[in-house]
Amino acid sequence: MARKQTNNQQKRNLQEQIKKLKNEIEELKLEREENKKSVLHFMQEAEMSQNELKRAQEVISQLTSQKSENTCLDASQECCHAAPTGLENERSRTDGFEGLYKSTEHETLALQNEFLKEKDRSTQQVIHDLSQRLDQASLSLRQWQEKYDDLYTLHMGLEIQIKEIEQAKTREIQLRSLNKVLRNEIRKMKQAQDESLNIEYLRNVIIKFLEKKTTRPQLVPILSALLQCTHEDKTKLHQIVQNSIAV
Image (tube, rainbow, N blue to C red; front, side, top):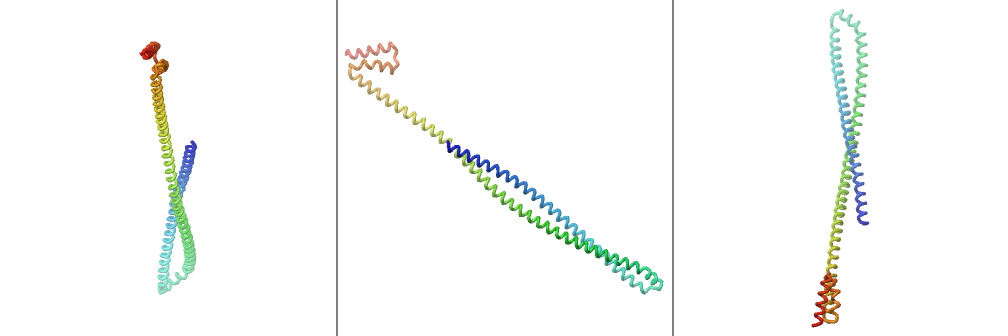
């Protein structure tokens, strides 16, 4: 009885541990899904940053091309110094505007270059941060996988223990049934042995009573009880005994 209670308690404890492990595994699965989503989000952000950097590089390339065109324009204007005097007068009137334009253009290009450089540094920093976050997420996934493998191994071990307990319980039931059968067989054998002894005893008693004529009448009540004789049978049996005595 105590062994059965111990097995049942062990079984309940194992079942509770398995339930707890299953809950932890489900939580780890949810955490893994969240990590996957985070990694995907990081990759999307990195791709967006790379696209912004690419667009910034295209703007720099366009500004460089525009600067080259302005250089060509300056060279063309220098060629105009050899033109007639009327053009020189026109040139003198536009010099102020061109100087202002070039100064403004230079400042604009400087600001744009500085903005693009700052944008490039910011983008590189974002990419660096995202790369670190991606590495951290990958590390978390590996740690999760290791923990999941450990829990799964423990879970399978507990399942094996439960099966062993169930098998032990089945063997215990079989042994109890076999023990019951053996007890019944022993009781039957003992009963048969007792009956055999009783028959032998009765046989010896009857023979002893038959050996003497004086004790033969005492057999009538004994035989009547054993044979369950009727009153008529008792009378006949008594008459037989009397005849044997008279002989």
